[in-house]
Amino acid sequence: MEITYSIVIPIYNEEANIKKLVKKLQFVAKELKGDCEIIFINDGSNDNSAEELREVYETYENIVVINLVRNYGQTYALAAGFDKARGSIIISMDGDLQHDPEEIPLFIEKLNEGYDIVSGWRKERKDDFITRRLPSRIANWLIGIISGINIHDFGTTFKAYRREVLSKIQLFGEQHRFIPALAFWLGARITEIPISNVIREKGKSNYGLSRTFKVILDLVLLRFLLKYSTKPLYFFGLPGLIFAFAGSGIGIFLLIRKLIRNIHILTEHGPLMFLAILLIIMGIQFISLGILAEIMSRAYYEIQQKRPYIIRNVLIKENKSH
Image 1 (cartoon, rainbow, N blue to C red):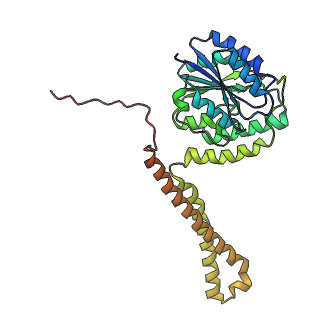
Image 2 (image 1 turned 120 degrees about the vertical axis):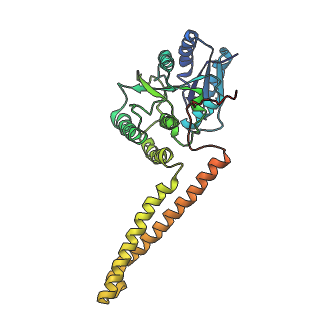
Image 3 (image 1 turned 90 degrees about the vertical axis):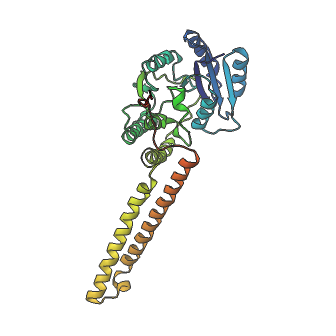
């Protein structure tokens, strides 16, 4: 059986929501033009989610359940689902009923207009402002600046993808929210649609303010991946040169003072001399790190037989001999 749609849903302690979610998904699946599979990834839940998932698996033919050995986090749970998905169109969403399955056809309709990724936009959010909405706004603003993508909501899991786009992206850390940015770098066409933001009825949210710090670190990595992954020497070399020139400048200043006024440098400018030495050493280290990263980057592309560019298509006229 050829699968057209794969709906991928990570689950962590959602025993109270699984059966209700499955009923809604089955209703939507019947309305879709094409066969649909629903993939649940049990991300090491410590409640009765595994038992609930087994029950729905035994009840419905189109349910796939992946049980991870422990809690890996949402990014790796999604990656496991994406790897098992057989559909040409893959839809990801949360398992807490805050995403409405009835909106899935809207995503598919937008994909049919020629886009590669359709991202949900929680235009009117109803969750807590301090712990959820404010950090989300800041993160979305920063990701938008770094990636150059004009969408409002990177954080929501509710997205639709063409399979060929996801197959080019490797997910690590907390990078699932950065898939549009990574895909945009690969040439994907991206848009967004407003979605409803339903208040959780049952269960407890697995997100909190602490996740903001992970996002900040991932933003640094995103910046590096998008701009410097093929030229890491520029990333490390620029601060290295600044440190080295600053340290050398201070050193020259101290040397001139020594030659002209015959001062005792260590006595009168001891801290400044140590600062100069420290800056020069840091500069050398940064430049050396950049050179090593450059060698590793080139080795990676050669070993993987990859090219540091992506071709959308080629127009070429063949020479025909008469």
